[in-house]
Image (tube, rainbow, N blue to C red; front, side, top):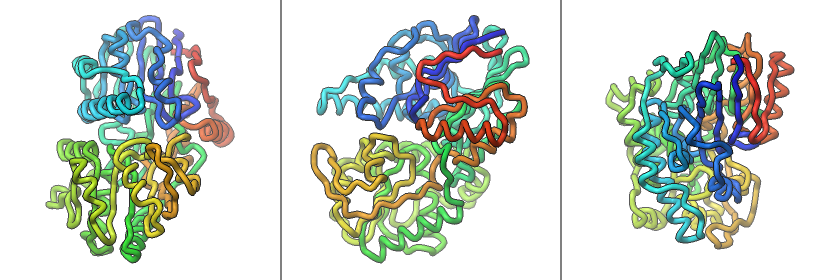
Length: 453
């Protein structure tokens, strides 16, 4: 039997994941995310979908990052009335993230005249369609299709989607976790699939090893303490922030660094961090054991949660060495921009980038060495040191991606390489062909492919 696989986002770029499997009996979407970082992202996100949302029967959500869930309320607003599946943490995080995104859109409408994609009622309508499932729980769909999730180790509750019909299997990886992560289990290697739709954010690059990663963080903190300066860490509110807090907690409590003021300056990250206490069973066993032994991994000497704007502005009054962790991870919004305006011209400041920086984002400009940038209309000179630790990325690197396919792709008819910049995707395509003899391709935006499913 044949089916059509459509690529309506997350191709040629990292963000905006949106894939469709149409079997004739059933139309299934996997993820429905925002395009982020690019200066034209607002216009792209406001465009009509390339398909009729009312024709979609089921939506599977791999995880709760905005580039995978951010357009779900618009999908519902435009006619989708099917079932939404995910794990429980993903549903609960989506509730937080979508409301936060709406606030940002409303602010940007007032300030820049940008379009607001959806309203409060559209979020409520989306959540009303949601059903939660645990890993490996089989979901029976129309047309003889069975589905289940496996742990992909990217963020809390993230999962690969496995769809099976008549002995044929297609797997959508979503974002694949970097192994090892501070908090999470490694990805479960998918096996016995005919088709794989996989990410490629770091398809052409390698991360540091864990020991190197932690040592680099320690050295940046020690250098900050020696200079009496400011260490700014733009971090994604979901997972990256919590991983950084765990690492700093362990460095302080083991005596490898002296306590210093650490400000978690993100209301969203604070809410998300509180959610981690709700779902400890999704953390890896060593972290669960650490918590059971009485260590509150998100509470250590020097740590402050700054919930209000007033609290955020007060950080500047704190003299001496300090760490500021604030969203967003690519500096395209959030409180980090205020701190960057305050501190980037100071040679005693270090801006530590710990996540992917999308093309067109402020974070990417800083990553690439810009000495002058514009933040919210104000020119800023960059005298600060800009450092990078890739090992904290939530994404698998080049070798991990190849190994994931090598570990379970023996019968794969085709691998579709998506969710990466063109260079990364094409590099990974070639590596899968050369090293594994896999029929790998990088699809184009709005491309449709016939598959045997």
